Image (cartoon, rainbow, N blue to C red; front, side, top):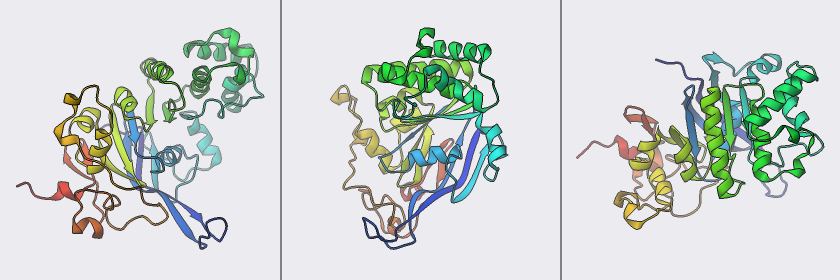
Length: 330
């Protein structure tokens, strides 16, 4: 079996909060942002990660990069356990993993020129400022579709899409293997989103990149992803190739998400995709017992309230955490 480029096993992140303050929470309360997530990303693929706001998508992406430390679980990169690596050991690994942020303006230092922004990772990892570094920065800038004359300009002089291209160039300057795209197009106009998504796909083919593409727009995820993972309240509830996720999802939450995607024509809406989600997502401070989706699920059973479903594989490559799939076929 091929070794995944990234593999998370039982990954969790609980934030300790409370002790009075604005919300009057008692000390020691934990916000369970990510809870026992196991996930694989294969080299060269794009794994889309979707779910409602607050479900833990961005936290999971940062955990995989060790930008924040896990409460529990294991992270392996290219077959090597990186969970317990120290700062200096992780520094070498970080050349191979980068992130593209949601806000292309907030992610760029307004006091730095484009040349300094893109070249900073090279300097941090030992390169010396000079002609060779400037050459690498210029080549990367042109690779993302910006002219060399932009090197001496500052972030405020560019449009949102151009700023995101600068952020992409900075992420790629070290020639990493893994890129976490954290809502990388959600702050952009629709026409610009398409340009950036097409750019990411071109760069992936050219540079052999692997993406974790975090988004809430399922139309964009469908276009760019090879496989899709669905998160709900800190847990992954379904993973499959994109064709299966969009045409034959098994989890009620996934079916409701797909049903919410606007169809170009009413006839294109499958009769089996009319599920709706009732109510609001529960608080991660006090998640429901059993299956976390049971408070909003139209198919809830007694077992759903009592026992959390395991992530099983009812079909090759299709994993789902739902008691409905555990029931014997009639």
